[in-house]
Structure formats: C-alpha cells, structure tokens
Amino acid sequence: MTAKATASTEPRPEASEEQIEIDLKDPLFAAFLAWLIPGMGHWYQGRRHKAVLFFVCILGTFFYGLYLGEGRVVYASMRDNDRRLPYLCQVGVGLPALPALIQAKRKVPFQVPIFKDKDFMAPPKEVLPPGSMRTDDLDRLHKRLHRYWELGTVYTMIAGLLNILAIYDAWGGPAFSTPAKKDEDDKPDDSGGKENET
Amino acid sequence: MIPLGTLSSAALLAVRINDLWYSLPLIVAVSLVYSATRHELPRPIASGAIRMAAWISGFMVVGFAILFAMSSML
Image (cartoon, rainbow over all chains, first blue to last red):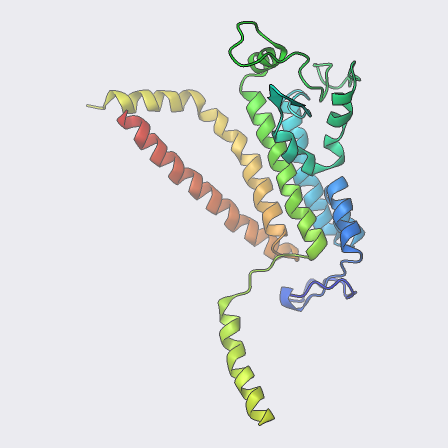
C-alpha cells in the first residue's frame, strides 16, 4: 500500500490494501486535527470509517476513565511535591484534556455540574510533602475514590497514548508490515530487469 | 492437602476477580485502534483487532499464571 499526500483515489471495498492510494491532503493539518479531536484528522482526509472508530474508541476510553475518577484524575500540576506526569499522556487526547490547564491556572476552579465533585479537572488544593502526618487533599481523593483513582488514571492515559497512534496514522498513513515473501518475489524480477538491460 | 499459599492466593483472586472486567473495554479499544493504524479497510482492521485481542488476552493469562504460581509459593 502506498499513502501519498498527492494521490486522490478513494479506498474501494473490493480493492486489496496494497492497491489503495490514500489522499492524506495536508498531513500536518490532519495530524493537528487528529490531536485536537480524535478522529477529526481522518474525517478531514475522507477516511470516515476510521474517523468514527478512533472517535468512539479513544474518546469512549477517555470519558469512561474520567467518569471512574469523578473528573479528578485528569489534572495538570508541576508543583514540587505533586508532579502529575500522567497528564503528559492524557493531553495526547487533545481538547477534552485541555480544561485541566485552565483549572490549574485558576484560584477558584470553574465548576461542572455533571460530576459530584465540583473541582472538575482541578489539581488538589493542598499537597503536603511525603512523610507528613497530616492528611492532605490528595490523600482524601485517594481514600474516597480508592481503586477508581488508579483505574481512571490508566484509562485516560491509555486514551491519550492511543491517540498518538491515530495522529501518526493521520500524518503518514497506516504503518503496514510488509510480508517477507514479497522481498523474495521481487528478487527474480530485479535480475530479469538487469538481463534485459545487458 | 492444598498449601496455605495457594489457598490465600485463590481467596484474594476470588475477592478481586470482578476487577478484571475493567480490562475488557481496554483490550477492545487498544486492539481496534492499533489494528486501524496498521490497516485501511474495515475487514482487515476487524480481523487484525481480533488477533490483537487474542494476543493481549493470552499474554495476560500467561502473566497471571506466572504471578499466581509465584504468589502461591510465598
């Protein structure tokens, strides 16, 4: 299969994958759209079935994780005692994870009524250094959400990482694994070509 | 007679077995998205996703069996 930015042939159901040429249009813009909303880059390229698949799978995973964590597992924080590294993966999902950046800047986080917890995507207010005897906001979150804290974090992280695969697909087309047999089949043709030249 | 380690591991497993259901949506999503980045047409995507899901499930079962055997020996 070849994925050319200049080609304009629509995928035909009856054609084998090797014969399809995909119109990637502007690959960089498609990659940006794919990051912004999962599937949007593929929709822009006219690859509708893949757009729907990425949209449903990636956003479904992200929002289910967000639901499990009651909207608190996605937050941005780079404080010394609370570096939220999972957010680096979560932000791969694009626009749905960006409210966390706004909430991190606000002193009084805006509230989203769909979750019980009013501090939607807001970082914990107070995080004490390790070894402190007092209970801080992060401890309370862990205690309240229990295993759903970890589950929600894993779901949202995986959604972000999956979207990176989708972004690559929007930028460069599908990453095909070429069968080894094909190389062997090509060899006689090459020698045949040389014979003709001589 | 069943060793105590095996009994305690089995008891822990029985308590937390329902948590494994949370892996199911992840397996489905990861298989479909990964397969979609390797193929273009719906049929190869679906068959690739089934193979990928089987591979992930098999890997999890093998990993689980190894960890279960190790914890039984403790």
